Image (cartoon, rainbow over all chains, first blue to last red; front, side, top):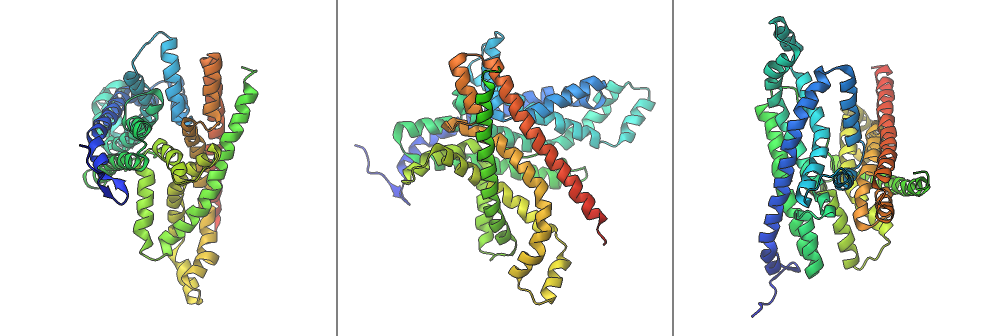
Length: 235
Length: 216
């Protein structure tokens, strides 16, 4: 019943087609978990980024310290910390949500800086005008600075989504069924090394290539008026 | 904590060893490919750009797994340490080309024209005139790259290279003292990486002051 393998350049194409639906499903998990972490990261990043700019000095230093810690230690370490520390303080989550929390930690470290840079890029006359109208500092931040800063964050946030997707591959170590993990599982079951790795790599490249095109497009076309904010690339 | 510190310090030494090796070997390839990308035959450009794209658009963890699975498959049996260095090297070269290329392109084009007018070939001008000037501009980003490599090398723990993260993980598995171990590991990484990135910032200031002090 089993058909002979369909070979192309030494690769078993029939097998690659066969595993494709599972791969796409795993890719969806990767994208979903990364997008979720990015969004939670924004929810935390905006208040933290705002406080980093207009908050009291000790709080600013604390946030800055947090950011340097997150950016100055390896991502895999944050996964281990979240993986061990959450149950340690009585928070029991499944692998998926542990992964989301861990990725959110990474995302926040960069998003605080994105928010800060975007807010500082809004002309300071805007803040002064708002204060002159009798607004309080938080009101000026919320009503005047943030809406203008938000558009400028979009290209940088797209880049950050790329970084988070790349970081999500490390979730394979805590058994989240994302693309890298599923690829490895198939390799261990079937020993089709090249076929699986190639397919996994191409799927990542499609998504990340599309996102980095989008980020460049947003930066050049849509936001050409604003100061270009860049986000450092992580691996 | 005092008990496990020597073990972690030894593992940190491995981390630094792997990272420095990958940086230095990476600089050799990064320079060659970066120069080829600037003055080499046009035929090479899409190949080099494609390589950079592959490195940058796939997760490093995947590259590590690929080295781990594919090298033995190709009949190349290497110790894990070497597999780790090779994976890190493959990754780092992709980033280092993008350090070399802008540095070369940042040298004033009059320099090349002057070399041309003296009858130098393109490659001779590159070697004698452009590269020495560009090299100093590469030093700060390369220091940064070393900091990135120290961070990235932690991923090698997934294929059981015994570096800092792996050592921490092993000690946790045998002692369950995760808080102490994780704090120490984080502190060691943090100090190492901060020192390197301060070094990069310092070098950048030095080199920029030097440049602005030059006669125009």
